Structure formats: C-alpha cells, structure tokens
Image (cartoon, rainbow, N blue to C red; front, top):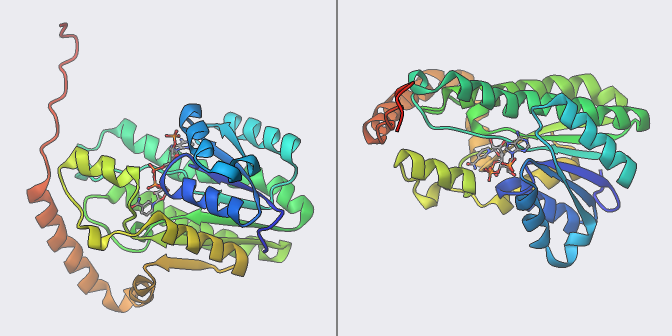
Length: 277
Ligand SMILES: NC(=O)c1ccc[n+]([C@@H]2O[C@H](COP(=O)([O-])OP(=O)(O)OC[C@H]3O[C@@H](n4cnc5c(N)ncnc54)[C@H](OP(=O)(O)O)[C@@H]3O)[C@@H](O)[C@H]2O)c1
C-alpha cells in the first residue's frame, strides 16, 4: 500500500520505535494519529517533528482498555477519516527471573502487549473491512521467535504477537487487508535504557539497532505488504532454521541465562505491609 495521503494510527507513538515510525510515516506523506497514555510526552514528541507536526494528531489512550480504545478510534475517525494503516507498537518489557516477577506486572505486560494489540486491531478492522483495504503492522520481537533469557513473560507476549499476526494474515488476506509483523532484536530506545538502569546489566552498543532501522522495516511491510521482517535480517535466516537448530538454540539460551543471572542486580527488598514511617 502506498503511504502518501493515507491515515495511519500508531500506538506507543511518544517514544522510541513508535515515535520514529510516526515521524517517518508523516515524512512519507501520511497523516498520523499518534496514541500513547501520557499526553505531555505525546505533545512533546509531536512538537519535535518540526514542519511534519501539522500532519500528526495526538490521542491519549491506554490500549489495554477497550472503552478507551473505542473512544480514541471513534474520535480519530470523526476528525481525520478512515484509517488505512495501523501500527500496533505499544509495549512494555522486563528482564526479570520469572519467579521474581510480581503477578500484577505479568498482568500489566499481557494487557499492554497482547490485549492492547487485540483491542486496537479489533477497532481498526471496522473501517478497514468497510473499505476492504488496510495494512496492520504488529511490532513483535525476536523474543517472539527465540527464547530470550530472563524474559519469559515478555517472550510469552511476543510469541502471541507472532502467532496472532500469522493467523490474522491468513484470515484477512481475502478481504483486502494485509497483516505483517516486524521482529526486531535489541533497539536503542528509552525502554532498553530503563531496563539497563533497573537491572545493572549493560548491553554492548555494537549489538543494538537504531529505531530508524526498525521504522524502515515497518514502512517496508506497509509498502510491499511483507508478512514478516526480522531485523537484523540475518536473524531471520536463523529463525527459519529454528526447528533444526532447536537443541543448539536451547543450549545457548541456558548458558546465557546462567551468565546474566550472575550479573543481575538483586531485587530491592519489598516494604513490609502495615509498617508505618
Ligand atoms: N527496544 C527494544 O529493544 C525492542 C526490541 C524488540 C521489540 N520491541 C518492541 O517495540 C515496541 C516499542 O518499544 P520501545 O523500545 O520503542 O519502547 P518505549 O521507548 O518505552 O516506548 C513505548 C511506547 O509505548 C507507550 N505505551 C506503553 N504502554 C502503553 C499503553 N498501555 N497504552 C498506550 N501506549 C502505551 C509509551 O507511552 P506511555 O507510557 O505514555 O503510554 C511509549 O510511547 C514494544 O512493543 C517493544 O516490545 C522493542
């Protein structure tokens, strides 16, 4: 699908990958409805686009709330018309040993990374099905193709994203709607910086991607209607060989888990209930 002149909705648009995708879509001639929760961060992101800001609107919405998603999509359609592009990018992550992850945090992660994506897709499909055209790009992760050490809950959400993308791709292709998924490795964004600070782990910068590289892949899925793009591309070939390389991949995951655990900062002690001052 061509980007020029289309209305695109981007979730998680105030930071990192979503911010870069929003700017690149606007530069490509799209009108962009940018979604995230914090309105101040959204307004600052839009203001940073300079002349492109006039092509963008901002909408505060928690993607994990069906009521909020419905209201935001309704408002966007009323003000800007029918969206032809949806980029489901909002997401959170955590590097944590599974047994130390609080159940509330697990719930929040599933609600943002999976339920949020389901809700936004469901809302976008109303106008897309009526027009019999549209492209939905889901931002997954290599954690949705491989087992990543100390990210089991995050991996569960991202495998869900890969599975949903492939299933919907098959379901909607006959209706003129394309669904693709981009699976990036580690990307230099505020999300990664926060995790580095929290865990005490540092990621060698040689191993990280720029948000611009991921944005390029997202725009490629839209323009060329690709099914899946893994960045860096070489990892795509490894993912394709996964069934054959399974034992080797699992060995590497076990070895790196042991190494990471030894470097992890111990969790901060929890405050005792009922104790004051
Ligand atoms: N960075 C990486 O290494 C990496 C690698 C692979 C995949 N990814 C995926 O790429 C996506 C973007 O990550 P990023 O690194 O760019 O993260 P980021 O810089 O932390 O940005 C996350 C964005 O999502 C928004 N968001 C979070 N929860 C939300 C909610 N419930 N409703 C609406 N918006 C919400 C945030 O704004 P508010 O907090 O204001 O809502 C922010 O705009 C995620 O899906 C992530 O899993 C990242």
